[in-house]
Image (cartoon, rainbow, N blue to C red; front, side, top):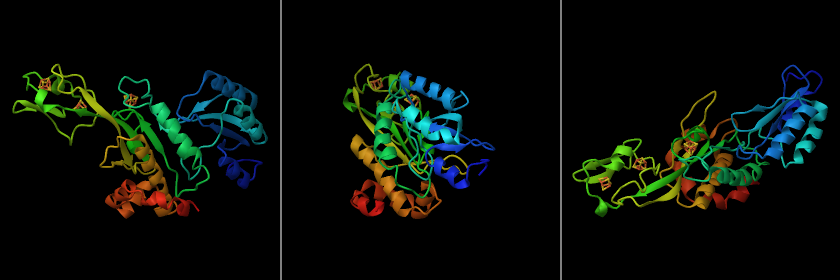
Length: 306
Ligand code: SF4
Ligand code: SF4
Ligand code: SF4
């Protein structure tokens, strides 16, 4: 630990509260949780005031959508927390626990297939706050993406959840046009007219939903909204690309339950110091997927968290 007059024990203690030592000083970065990367004007004012009052007058944004106020003296930490609490803001986001949720702007983005801000808030309440006291084998990162464009890289998080829209193609209405609007506009060339009828290659289609309502003959009038889930991604000292569960979830509750099952699974099966990707590698993706698609682990929740 590099603080000058603060004991290593206290540096560790306040780190657990979201205050990270500014190396070589007795000052700390206060890490404020934004819940889903969106804060109100009043909250921004409060953070700016707190930065001037307790810190060095600056704020810094982290890659996981938290806001850090640097330069807070050790003895001002509690006062800082009380000050930002006026606007409902809290510090935290460190440790071998569920980390702050990252979300893209899918709620307002033209490609968004889900309300990413609302979903991230729900995940925050249920799994960041709800599991705040649960120590895991390592950190556990969750990201919410509005569509398969993956702007917030959900596949590089322990769990990534992505909005989907599955085109409902009506073969009977398809005229097998020479110039097919769907084939022309599919961004990843998953759709092609073959033998006089459109074919969507399910292995290639990423369910971006952009073809829905785009056939002039109404061959794709609608598409169900859903959620794709990646597990076991990580980015950092080591890199692993998450793998998708074979099922697309049409029910939000079911998708959220998968997140809970993954956290419980990690708590139960993970070895101290390993990330979920390593647990999956050790146990086997198919076995983990089987666990996440069944409800057995939810029945053991009390036992696992005891
Ligand atoms: S992932 Fe999709 S919805 Fe989210 S910001 Fe990127 S393009 Fe928009
Ligand atoms: S999907 Fe529509 S545009 Fe494409 S070939 Fe069929 S009818 Fe024509
Ligand atoms: S959902 Fe997207 S990827 Fe799939 S066929 Fe339609 S446009 Fe192409």
